[in-house]
Image 1 (cartoon, rainbow, N blue to C red):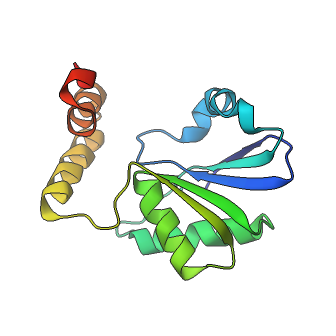
Image 2: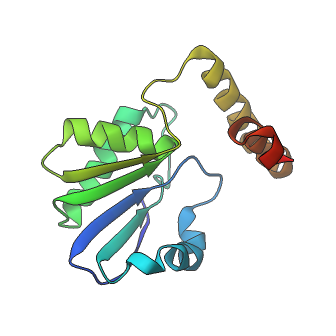
Length: 151
């Protein structure tokens, strides 16, 4: 699991992004720029997903790995910000390891995924496996954004 660190504040913010075809660390400079207003108050860690994913890898497994990485880095009493799939992982970390998390921030996520959403995610995974990036981006945008924003 790769991570990037930026900022020099006394408080710690860990960001768990959503599902991605590429490692988020490729965009480290862009992410650091987006959060630059927070870097005096926070030391910010951005975690990527695990580099080599096992065939079966549940949100609970992701949370266990994320908590282990947080502990390995010596981080404690963190503010944990999860987006999309990262929000599901963040909720699970906060439930399983409450001593690590002082604040939980969630964006564009869900505590439960219904059958329809699983079908959509399975379709995205299929497109990713087939390296159909443009189709994946369009399919993702169509489901995530309101129609007028997507257009």
